[in-house]
Amino acid sequence: MKNIVVLVSGGGTNLQALIDAQNNGMFKNGRISCVISSKSGAYALERAAKNSIPTRVIARNSYDDFSSYTDALLSALQEENADLIVLAGFMTILDSKIIKAYENKIVNVHPSLIPAFCGVGFYGLKVHEQALARGVKYSGATVHFVNEEADGGPIILQKPVAVNSDDTPEVLQRRIMEEAEWILLPNVVKLFCEDKIKVENNKVIIKD
Ligand code: GAR
Image (cartoon, rainbow, N blue to C red; front, top):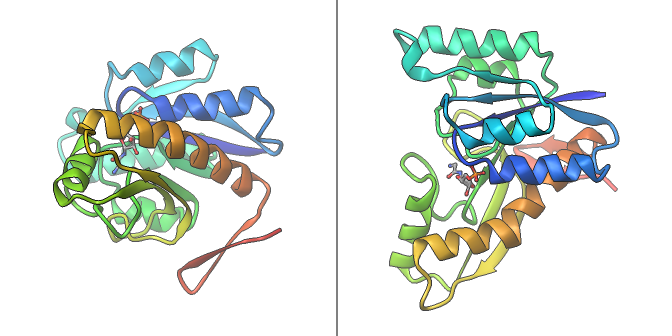
């Protein structure tokens, strides 16, 4: 049974999609064993607690420097025996020490079709503001492995979502969550738990 540790910072609707998938029996060989939040008041923590999932708060601003924050987060992941780390709306940069320790074991959901609207500074609503400003007709979501380049790791699954001419960033964000993120993320976790994701030359191959 793989230990799935979910890292969050906010509302946690993607965490909720994972909890719902788990409650529906989608993860045959894994379970969400811990939710770690970078913010103490995050609603995601309540979602976990309601489902009896253990939680931890490791806030960047509780540590003097980035290095001691990284060490605290790494220790927590090791204590939890994490097999898979899911960044579900996690808004803090991970140090390369953590990324190296969990190569191809950290996945992130990003609310655009990478390589569009991604990288440093593209997170949350900012992504959708930029997509609307550029006038794209389709955006979407991507789930990818995390490497040392921001949003640059191997792409696992993507799904396009139509942009409407009267969309606001909030409306587009919600449609992309509903039609893409909340579907892709549980599917990636399911595939990972079933050992069906292989990385070759920085590309993902999904095994049958
Ligand atoms: C989601 O749209 C997620 O894709 C995005 O933040 C939102 C979190 O929502 N993540 C990023 O922008 C990461 N670069 P949630 O807390 O309700 O899951």
